[in-house]
Image (tube, rainbow over the protein chains, first blue to last red):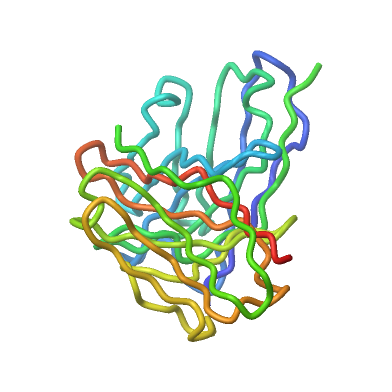
Length: 120
Length: 108
């Protein structure tokens, strides 16, 4: 069974770039079985999908975040990453990485999540 | 973009049935998935493709989907079912994963 683990700074200053990495174990990220994605949850609020990527590099982005978000995959390290630029306090959230099955798309496995706080 | 509407809260006594709704325009034409999130934990899928159960999910969890409403039902509710429940679809018109706002289940 796939296991996913987020890593990255827990504190980011306003206007800077949030960078997170998800390490996948128990399976290969360059197979054709899954999309890889990021989902976030502000404290006390609901889930918000951020982006998906297929191992080939095909991407989908949340429209409201598209101008600030980049998702990428590194098949050599079995990892995928998220970059969110120009962060504000509104970007404070628990960030989850996930594997998504398709046809139709659903979230099969979640990382444990990592809290990122935007504060000076 | 596609919007999924869930009531914010649901109160149910132990042993009774909890019925969660997820409203969306013609939601019956797409597959709906449901996730359970206990406090401080990552979500876990409890129903996929409207009514299928992942391995390890009790038969007490069931789902249906028709018209403008999808439904998750938990029979014989237990204290351990207390959690937030989210519905989710794939909006093919925008290529977006869409979550409902979530319903908090309180077991009385």
